[in-house]
Image (cartoon, rainbow over all chains, first blue to last red; front, side, top):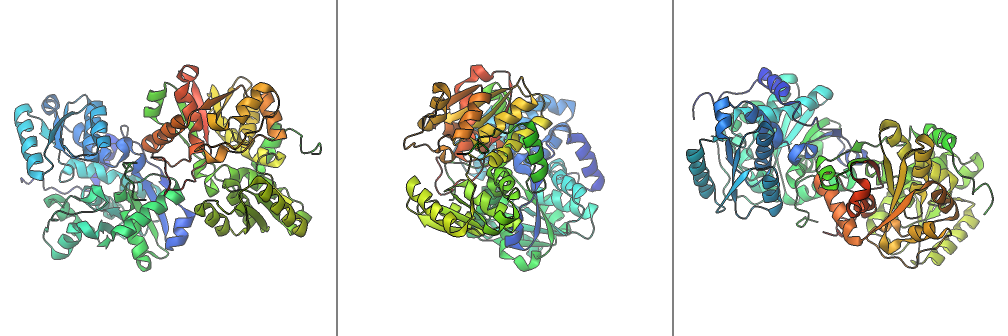
Length: 319
Length: 319
């Protein structure tokens, strides 16, 4: 990996990114629930990226990456492998920019996600559901087409884009004591942490991760990357492991990572659905699960939570 | 029934009601979905009463009724029979006003609704799940306590309260061609129709009702009340039949009532959940179902829909 990839975003990068992408994204609403505040003892502000285009924060990073392509790169298009929200986000961001998108998806990806990527006009290539098959299939496509690979999280421009959700939240709610985001590959958490620490030096950044996919927790505490080994969690957006860039940013800017049980994730997801009447995917419920499991840490604190997305298969709910 | 009950609300009544209740209620947001607009060919503005306190528009009418009690009536409290959203709404409205609430509920009411009514501090009396048992149990309670019976829909003050949702919507969105609401007992539809016709003489009011509980459709077309006989529909908020006052208002102010199939209701509910990421109960999806079944009527029109509520049993979803 070359040095330019490992450059860490700063406040100016995020500020410029926000101005670059703001006319393409939704400024998502911030919601609160009296009854969830009562249950947790905290004062929680939910930044609702489930209402973002394509139903997840991923559209912010994908849009930023596509908008920074050179004219030559635009001619060749963009490519990625993903079974989830990044694929749909990149497909739509590319479509809006008039750029071709190639997406490698595992054959067993949920039908609803296959449909979404197709709906946004990407060219899909299916492969076996292994990381090796995904990477080798993608490599063939980028070699053949010259398309630019947009990594879902270990990418400077993608992280700058994901940072804009916390940037909006913190500019509108200056009173937060803590900001929390879920961590999978670490793109959202990295962006959130940089926005938080550059806008507010005194704010605490507390990440939340499923116990069953706790590579970030382990890596953060060990001081080197320890990838997950075949993790299984209902939070299907958090199965990926940290990359070199996200690990570096998280190590330097995050105060703590809390891990949570599968039962807590489902309980938190159900609370949000029932009390707030909004649809969030299991990954989005992980920070609230961390609050439910650690009420002492969050008691009487004003906590911002990035709700990462709302793409769930209604035929396969945990309740 | 005495004359004062049959008085019909006018613009001034609704204006005064809004000023009376506005500090107690949420001004609910108005949401749109590009993809639902594309599917229907209409431009739809959803007024989201699922985000109202107690999760439904019912809180508006209950609040207005409680705020208009005399000091003597306040001492004796309020009472109603309901298995649904009106019970929770009246319980919370009474609690806020420091008034005692008595609620008669059928034994087989959903556990989540029993819990909600209890949570808001009402005294619950359970009875057999028949209208006769509900009415006789309620009568015993009002005789014993002197509590004021707040009818869920055939009540002037309740209708004025329910009217404030359309009042907010039409004041903020002056460009609507059509406004639509679901119809059960007719409280929401009556209030919506009076707000619409008094604010905008040229707007069309089109109600939507399940085919399987089509008493309003039949009554509207016959010119006299034809109650439902043991109706069965997934739209559990729309099982009740019109009352004398709601029938009168609807006859005079509604342009059309469309009936829809159970399949369309489920399809519309799913569309709202998947595309808008908000939780609505089946009754709320009935107007969108009517648009899906009658695209020609709504093509290129700007349509306001009152989303009535978001209280669903997550353990018993239709998908």
